[in-house]
Image (cartoon, rainbow, N blue to C red; front, side, top):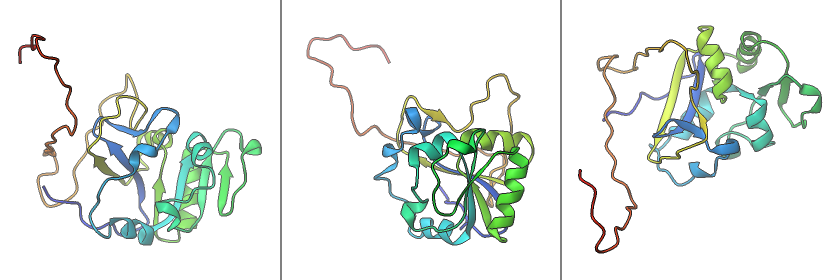
Length: 197
């Protein structure tokens, strides 16, 4: 399977996440401890550190990671937090709390990004921007883990399906094939009848 091309700084709006195989970008309550311990292509984080000019996130996620910088603190730049109640937010360096529509938040974020990319780190804001036609790319890193519950990347019951074109040299409508083997398996006690496969 081919990896994606290196990320470039082109003033794009990227909806960017590490995601579990079952579609979660955070655990219950925006818990993110599960994200540790996965290997990525060498230089991958550095690509995003160099191509990201600003970050846009939501208040729920910010309240959990409060004062934490993206990419383990290696990225420095303006962070914008979109919220309905900016007056009770905990202030932090280079963090601006916005109370506006998502399109205006993107305009502000892109201006601050100075020609680099604006990374969107919020499922809710990303969904709204997708509906407004303001997402340039959905950039996912799928981790070999099943969470079973948490915050989904795209949770929009009753909406029409949104078809995507995969970037790269292959057929943009082809599926991505992945195959995993569980690292832990249930032990069936001796004498227990096995279920038919």
